[in-house]
Image (tube, rainbow, N blue to C red; front, side, top):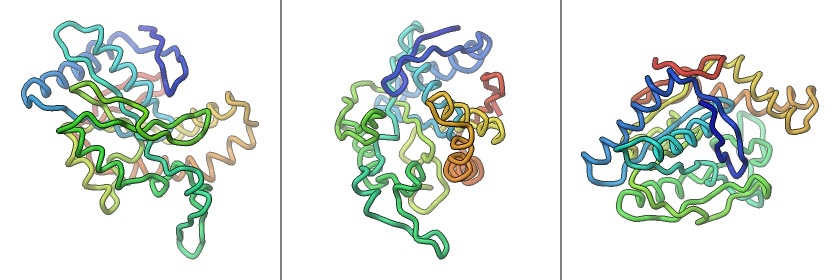
Amino acid sequence: MKVLLNISGFETEALFPDNNIEKIHKPLIEKFSRLYQEKKERIIIFLAAPPGSGKSTLAAFWEHLSHTLPNVDALQVLPFDGFHYPNEILDSNYIMRGDEKVKLRSIKGGYETFNLTSLIDKLKKLKTQDPKWPYYDRNLHDPIDDAITVDKGIVVIEGNWLLLNEPVWNGLHELADFTIFIDADPRFLEERLVNRKIRGGTSLEDAQAFYKNSDSNNVDMVLNHSVKADLTLYMNQDGSFEIN
């Protein structure tokens, strides 16, 4: 199935194999709906995945699918990226990595550059309220507070660090009703991330350097340092998924 999706404010055409839709995606949407009907409260789904795995596209497709399938409840995607610290904070704060003092702006996208306290507060409010949700503006390259109105009974939160196995982070999954992780070959993710930079106008050399200095660390951390999810999907190199 070819479908036009809105990903972070940009229209994107995506292709999902029909057999994946029937065997994986439709059953998941139906499962989310059953959970909602059984618990009779807002259902929180985590979709955690490394950079380059297409998690935002997949989440947007699930939202689209939930509006087209009969007898299921529509879901809403809530991006994790809105919890980035603003650039003014990243520019004026540092962390220590070993003996090196590292400016947060230089590792933007790493888990240290997100406001975990604010995320936990919003996750707790989701169960009893309709809180406003932050959004990351990819034109401003900064988060915008309270930009999204949460109005659905099923929400899918997608991001890299939702299942991170680090202190405090490793308790986030307890605030979710169901967790999903996307696994993939790191070499394939490198190819996708480098090509993404090139499509955005970056030279091959600069794209490879950015991957080595930034994306590679995040890919490795997510793939090898996340708590076990309720369900793991493996992304094949043709873009299809299988259940691990």
